[in-house]
Image (cartoon, rainbow, N blue to C red; front, top):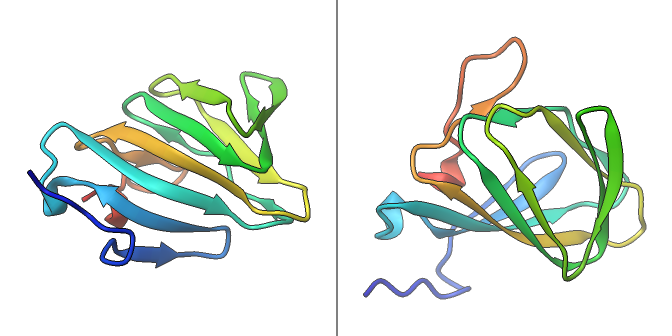
Length: 124
């Protein structure tokens, strides 16, 4: 049984967030990828969709999500289920980071308007 420790998990970072790769094909998972997501304070991330359902389980802080012309807050203890092909945008207007565990089926790809589909490095 693969065991990924917090210290050995790969870290990825961009302007908006930090991603800690937990489960993925490169780490022994065959059906689901999972990572720890930290959205930095003051971030307004660009809209995107995925070609598979994505699940966020909020651990700390809160974020604002806009999806289907609706805006709502996802806070610690909440779960957010984003259906496949539904464009959404995440923002953290707070002074504290937002943290969640995110689950996406293996092979799921991000769909960013005007760009080719991408499999995120933390999900490979």
